[in-house]
Length: 394
Image 1 (cartoon, rainbow, N blue to C red):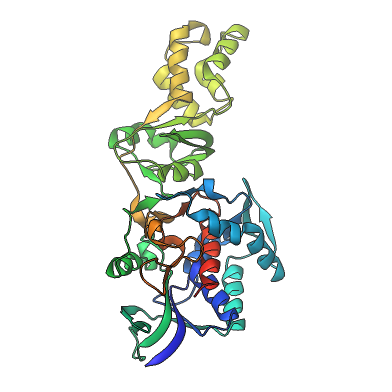
Image 2: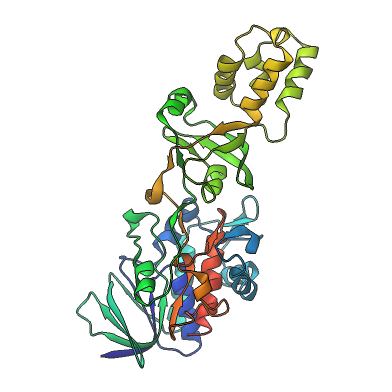
């Protein structure tokens, strides 16, 4: 039987960060991943440029049944700490919007950074290798692998397997099942940061808008975001929709303001006073994409010119523009979800070390844990922070 101080299951952002930190402390570390190469989600993130953190990362940008849990890790390893690491490797980056930092070049630079950190720390990496079974012993854990290699005896076992999002990349609920095996509770999980599918009746109306994008204000149950929305052939997408999807529940309406900074009623009333001969579509198209303006005008303003519109009718148009209520049929599911909401119950973990309170030597980090960030680099920051904290403890 082979022996290691630490076995990390999962060569993603959190797993590689943890392994590098543990190795740097002199621990013998083995990282295993069933994928053919490490950091698959890193490589495809941010359109291939990796939105590796957010300057505004803080506890308010995360969703969890235990909202205070993430504070310790985020404070101990901050966005500035990871930025310093990126700069040490000479990786050029830029801020896009809302504090989001992207590589100027390829996301592979972040993967290469983590691999270099692991090499320097003498971490062993085995890809194309699955964990078939893990058992608790008095000395730690015995980890059985899919290859013909001998089982590994380790003192610490770190689960960094991610969630169920994007199954075509090999994502599974393995980490959640492993938690359950060891008696660590798991909260309900669901797709998050995911596009929404609309009912057939809504889609029929909105077919002409497929491909149209515009800034909106979207809200649901007290959560609100002001970012871009995209009409698609299946429903709604874009950053604003992905953000609200983490809060939305099936069967419920979301409210969308398509002129976030303009009161449509006041805008139309002013236009009626200054040039009542204009038609509604012309006025709306000054503020909205033309196809959207035409659709709203066709549905709400078939009454000639602005001069022909009553205040009551203009209030209805305002509702259609500023307070559009839509009830999505569903989300697109784990197939396209960027992350999994929910996971290993943080009440069962130590917030400083990520260790399972009732299972000595067992740790959970990254997406497998019930800590889900907003869109915009927050989930990567959670991976760095939680991975770093575990790396100091294993």
